[in-house]
Image (tube, rainbow over all chains, first blue to last red):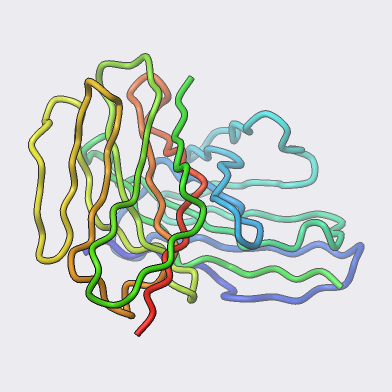
Length: 117
Length: 115
């Protein structure tokens, strides 16, 4: 089956620093990737939609200058949390839509747990 | 706008009991997909089922069954003879054609199955 990986699995960073999270589709090409954020005991909230070779589309209320998304290739999307603060501590999950496959098809990564101290 | 409501925040049952998790959705689209995912403590989402808006057939997979009713905009999930391993958070989700098939999740229902 289709596999999506995320790196790192967990990361701890100091307040004010930036951290990059990678999302890779390992055995398929993904024209679209989605980024979600999940706070403890809450649901997954869609942050942005990332299409290969174009700018990401952010959901309302998500600061695009704070959460930089780059989808430079058909197998890699990155989310950079700039100037991270403790309130950015969360579980970040990506998903990828296979190129040329059924419209609803998407596969989720295992998530990255970010802790900002 | 698409919306998914899971009114049950937490459910606690004793092993071998049956339990139903409710899901109500809102959409103006005629083409949409509904999903159920399981999220164990590890955090990784486990896909359970997908249903499209044109297929109201109920489905059974082992101890799991799903009841899709467009008339009430519901897509409920029943676990028969629950087991401790079923303890997790369960999410109902909606993906609609008009929204570019981005997936919107309900709030989730935390299921505790006690031995």
